[in-house]
Amino acid sequence: MSSPEFPVNSKYQFVQPPWSQNAVIYQVNTRQFSAQGTFKGVEAGLDHIKALGADIIWLMPVHPIGEKNRKGSLGSPYAVKDYFGVNPEFGSEQDFHDLVTGIHARGMKVIIDWVPNHSAWDCDLVTSHPQWYARDFKGDFRPSPWWDWDDIIEFDYDQTGLRTYMIDALQYWVKTFDIDGFRCDVAGYVPNDFWEQARQQLDKIKPVFMLAEWENRDLHEQAFNMSYAWSWNETVHGIAMGGLPLDKLRKYYSWNERSWPKSAYRMTFVSNHDMNSWDGTQHEQFGIFLKAAIVLSVIGEGMPLIYNSQEAGETKRLAFFERDPIDWQTHEIGDFYRQLITIKKSIPALFNGPFGATMIQVPGSHMDKVFAFVRQQGNDKVLVILNFSDAPVSVTFDSLLYPGTYHDLLSGKTCTLSRDQPMLMPAAGYTVLHQTITAS
Image 1 (cartoon, rainbow, N blue to C red):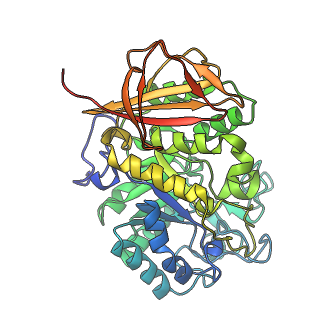
Image 2: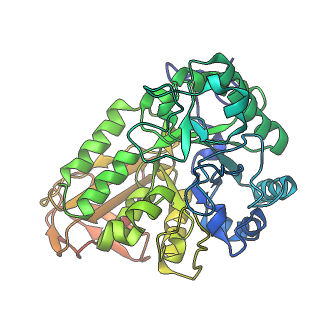
């Protein structure tokens, strides 16, 4: 039975909760967030996170980490030793309670990372229920094939007992700590029917918010509110690095509009823990196009993610298996995020998923360099123009959506645009314009 907040809506039954209509998500790497590397350290930073405009805090795994075959001196948070435990590196159960209470007191939600596909080699289940684990061709426990994840071993979801255990563990965290949902690691490696079973049981306790680290529309049918827009990130990165044509971005948005349910949230991001540690900082990934990518992630369709330290300039790749605290500083990227998020939250056309407007392309004279779109809803029209080339471009737009008098939401200036007057866009330039539509 569906929760009252998630009534049936055609095949894709979840109607997103109203509190999420213009929400922004913020990822916390507890180990690196503060000098202490603890829940208390995160709690001390909650006002900072709130001031950015975040509504959902996603905490990376909070569980004890396996010691057998661990990587580095502290191990990966994704090698879970005890699904019912709190990692003593981060603090006590009471410390975690206090953190959740502090998040809720500030009007934010909290989801925790859940690692259902695999456990640490010395997880308590290895000895108590060895039949719940997948085996390789020799009959031995196996890490996930084709990856270098040799610090973990995979579960076998054909085992009914494993499914019952994992759902009980998920329920425990909602019941005991009053968390608001889960970010589910490599969600597509676990059968979708398990997620449907889990969602039904969790919603009996309270309506939860579920984020899948995966990109598949069917996960939204009965289980997940939001999924990763990995292909969005890979496309924008490829364009920024000069390896992909701009048309690849148009293909993403065509796919997003026509193939995915309108009710599904897609998480758009320029950084996260995987990218930062293994692929590079936001500056390494996007170069001179970083701000244009951030504009598109926040003002375009999707729920934007901020990974902790982006707002401080993300000056380094954070170590994954050791302590490596963030170098906190005031930085223009933080101010930029705050400005864009304030804009997003103030104009309903820019809201998430079914609450906001669909992006409509505005064709121009340099389709290989300039990406432009409108989001229009009610009396509001927002025009966004992005120059994804490393040189200035003089561009014209022969579209009925283009002309008019606008308020520049970033500079505060007023401008009047016409189809026969070129706009000069600087290299890697961006503009976000607002027009109030009056009835004719």
